[in-house]
Image (cartoon, rainbow, N blue to C red; front, side):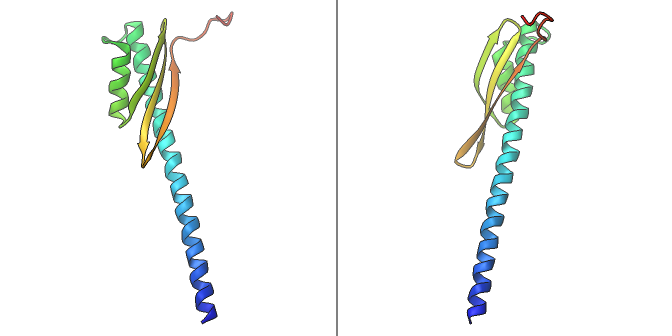
Length: 110
């Protein structure tokens, strides 16, 4: 009888640890999806700002974010540099990532 209770307790602990690790892994995957969506949205906005792609830069970024099952939460253009934030839902929470895209800085750092 005592062995059965001990085995059931050990099984419950193992199940709890497994569930916790699976949840942490799923959250990490969602975070990476948000980062990828933010990268793609920033590139789309920068392409729009530079004229390589026709359209309003932040609308292009929103379309790319939505294609990745995300939502554009911020979009800032400074010249040809686009900085965007994308949110992807994860249960009751959301993974939020930001990305920046544009031409490289000059050698003088400006």
